[in-house]
Image (cartoon, rainbow, N blue to C red; front, side, top):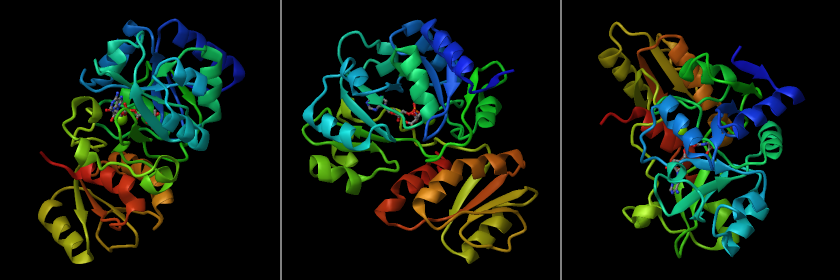
Length: 322
Ligand code: TXA
Ligand code: MG
């Protein structure tokens, strides 16, 4: 029975498992995470093995509060202001690390990524475990991130321990913000964007400006990521969509994600015209299409405005063909 409904006894047991160096998948407000004791290099290495994750891709460490983050990082004034404003929440801060954080967590970088998740179950687990918990999204590397317990089992198999917390509310991974340099930079867009963050710490640098500065780039941002097994194409108008369906869809079941019905013969899912609600539904919709056995997914382009950045980033990666 890999999926555990989250009773107080189950959370106690999960906390013990983590302390003993074993893996536990748990819900956060963004996506489900696959957790391990962050200060136990052997425990952390099990994450990489189970996910098939490349060793150069560092992990986010989840802590119960700011005190937990201070023990791992060289905390600073900007981090303090952001933490007061947004933690617990979908914001990951990259800071210089303190000695004692294993290389297995940071992939050898001089920085470490930390966040306090805004999910009652995750917080209770972290409080009971009394250790920092390294956790990437609980899926095989490059597959679609899980927003339900069943998605975790589908991707990682029956032997994983999953605390069931229902559906994740945010549905897209946290914003990763680098605070290790003179100017902060978003390394991975998420629900919180520059507009929300800048009032607290001033203008951000563009991610492009810091690309290539080794510790400041986000090594995990592989181009093809968040990818379903089906081929994905973005379309900007109905004529385009019908064209792709005819050209690429031959003999395949087609899936469509759109803002309004397309009349393409397909398994079609309509998503809301609002970035937060769209983000909350996107991975669930992709999982649904994958489960329906589609071989081609046509996705309507989203608006070009900054509040769609996180969604647009995930769609581009899903559609990327190297
Ligand atoms: O919402 C989330 O962030 C979820 C939940 C479980 O918290 N976690 C998540 O983890 O998305 P993961 O491993 O799938 O993505 C972690 C991202 C990667 O892009 C990685 O490169 C970046 O954070 N990252 C981690 N440590 C870093 C560091 N020291 N410097 C730069 N980027 C880092
Ligand atoms: Mg991931």
